[in-house]
Length: 298
Image 1 (cartoon, one colour):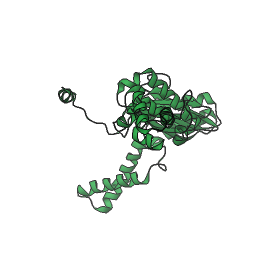
Image 2 (cartoon, rainbow, N blue to C red; image 1 turned 90 degrees about the vertical axis):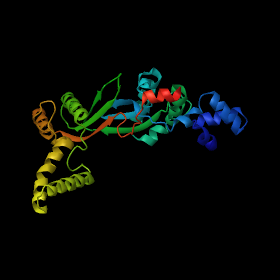
Image 3 (spheres, rainbow, N blue to C red; image 1 turned 90 degrees about the horizontal axis):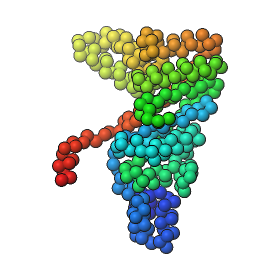
Image 4 (cartoon, one colour; image 1 turned 45 degrees about the vertical axis):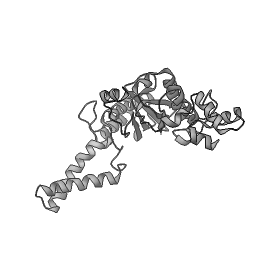
């Protein structure tokens, strides 16, 4: 079964069935899988998949996002693909965002795991289909607010955001604040919730760049370092959520928005984390010259 999977890229249960149907003959099993359209996965697995959809699912005090990629945006409009993304998000919720656990879980109504079903989708859809990543945010007590930008259906879209707010305050008020924060995050793409959570390597890289920039303008090392402190604060205001200016009113710092909301509610609010998944983010897309492609085909 392992050898057949490696040679065809088909799912474990499909390989097992193929060998059973052909008395263990490897070559006949490969032909059987090819005829079923299941052996195509291996050839298509290497093709760039940067389109698709982000799926979202919510539970009590928890929210999850799952990104499923396809090769073309056209597939994202396919009902079968959309149903698969929704099912993937639901399974991510059951696994509380644990990718390996979700992928190894039996797919509802199928005869294999989520990983096996993803392989089958390649044959069904005719493109490379990849379950790329899953994330989760939980808050107890409190709420996890969600927002989907460029939504194509319920819980489906291009940019998904989760925001966790921990508080004993009114859940409806917390959710309203969380929705606004989620929209803010979708627009500004912060790298961390607080300055303490920002990767020190990112800060050091920015600091080194700014010092070199100041020195190139003729400043001494000492003066350059003093100048950089102010610029680092500006850098934080651009990439750290708590330090950003709230896009809703365009004047209040996000940290103060949360603090003020807590005072009005009569209960402290703690931003315990956020997740933002943008479809295809970080995938190097192949630049296509459509005219050249047509000419080459001809």
